[in-house]
Length: 284
Image (tube, rainbow, N blue to C red; front, side):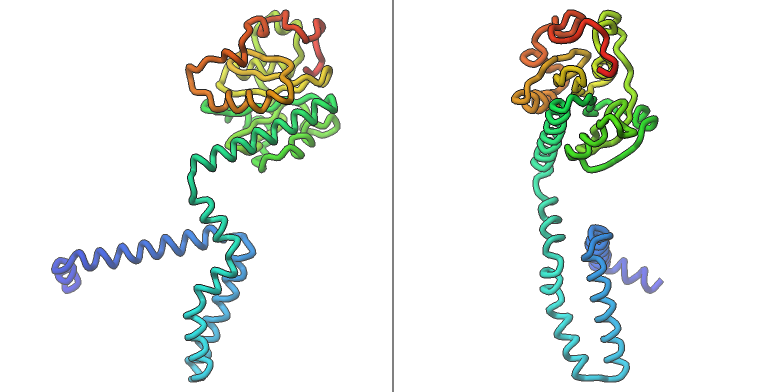
């Protein structure tokens, strides 16, 4: 009852105390959570353990000189932590920057890595199918594939699609600028005419873009040509100088935007597309 009366007499004062505790708890918890698993976390744990033990021993044994030194050390601890955790602090402040700018830069890096992988695989005549997931998720396909959840880089993509690796069959799904899964099996297009003239990878690229809003990059192992698929349409033989520009445009494209200028010829979506073999390709 006494505590209740005190709270009712000055509620703002006690609410301020609660707010301060909550802010400090959030700040300390967020800092420790951010440092988890890093080298800095072990340094911090060791430093705090040493200081607490020394302080306890000095107070228990009344070691005045050591106690005075420890008090001074606690005062400069903030500066010491800034020096020790400089890389982590720099990374944290960088992440607090513009989220939209960071997302754009990350997407651009992702596209550059995929383009580099596609060009290198095309030069080696190694087939590949790389699919960018957008608004419509592909959880079912990912669950039936080999989940990777790895940072995206062109070396990893090129390794996945090498013919002697276990994951080279199927395709790769890019989600949130990461390689979500490999060895993904996509639905094939139902267009009967395309089934006669295209290989499995190209039909899968068209099929997944017919059922979702994904963007697919296909590398033909027979010709080394790079193609792009979107909304059930395929643009063949995209040159190295255009593929990055096309992907940037397509991945920024909002619903209802025209594909004109990229998929500007409906003839490229039928079985008479110039540049494709008239006989079925084994793997696309």
